[in-house]
Length: 368
Image (cartoon, rainbow, N blue to C red; front, side, top):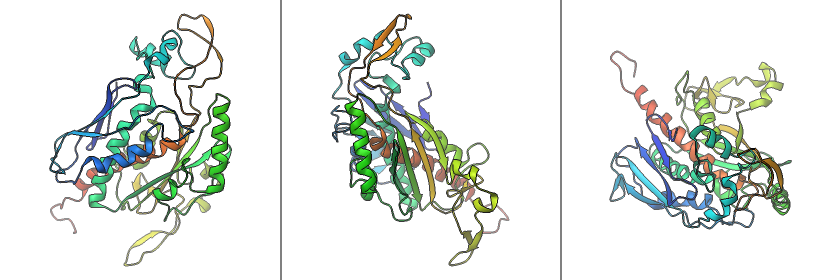
C-alpha cells in the first residue's frame, strides 16, 4: 500500500479509522527547527470531528503526541513520530457492512485488491486518516516558515449551487475563514451553505462543493520539471485526499474559454529591479515552477458516499439488498477538509523548498 508522500520531506501515515490510533512518521525535516505539540494542535482542532452541529457527532479530541525526533523543543533531524489516539470508536455500528459494500465507497475495491478489508469505518480509506496528514502538514508549515514567510489559506468557495465571491487573495486569513463554522468568509453565502448542509442532513443525504486555496510568499523557482512540476505535485496531493474529484489552478478549466491574448500574463517592472507578471491567470506557477506570485487553486469534493437514505444495491455475494448505512457521518466534508487542503499544500511546498536548496549550491565559475 502506498502510504508515503514526498521525496525529501517524506511523510508516512499509519492507522485505521477504528483502530487504537492513527499517526505519521516524518523523515527529512532539518534539525534545529523549533517544534512542540502546540505548533501542531491548532490545525488538528480545526479538522477534528464533533466540533459543529453539522459535522459527524463522533467525538475525538485529536490530541497529538510527539513520540520522537525532538529534544527540548527543537527537531533533531531524525524521524519525527506523531500519534493521535482514536477514542470514540463504535465498530458495532458497521457490523451490517461486513457483507455489504457501501455504494461508491472503497469497501468493494479494497476487498478486491487485498482480499480483505477493515471491518469498520472504512479503515485506511476513511477520512479519519487525514488527521495524520494535518499533523504532518503543521510540521511542514513550521519548517517552511522558519525560512520563508509563506502563508497558506484555504476556504470553502462553494457548497452545492451556493458559490461565494472570491475574496482578496492578498489579504484573506485563516481568522477570516474561521469566523463562521462552514469556513466560508462571505457571510451571506455562508448562511446559504449552512442551510444546504442542514437540508441534506435532514434528508439523510450529503452535498459536495469546492475548496479554494491561496498561497502567499513562495519565491520564484520552486518546482521540479518535468515530472515533478509544482502544479503536478499539488494535483497529486489534492487528489489523494478522500472525496476529491477535481483540481484546477489559476483560471483552470475557465482558460478553455479564453484566447491566448486574454490568458497570457505579460511582465512588468518590479520595485527594486527585475520583472514580475502583471496579471496572474496562471495561478502563480509557470512551466511547473513558482513565479513569485500568489499560488491559487481549487479542489472539487464530491458528496459523501456514506448516507442514511435507503439504497438498492447488492451484497458481496450478489444478493440484492436495500442498504441503509449506520454510524456517524458528515453530510458535507467541506468545512473540515479546509485544514486538510492546507496540510497537503504545506507538504508539497516543504518538499519543493528542500529540493530547491540543491539549486542554490554555488557552482565553479557560476555567476553569483
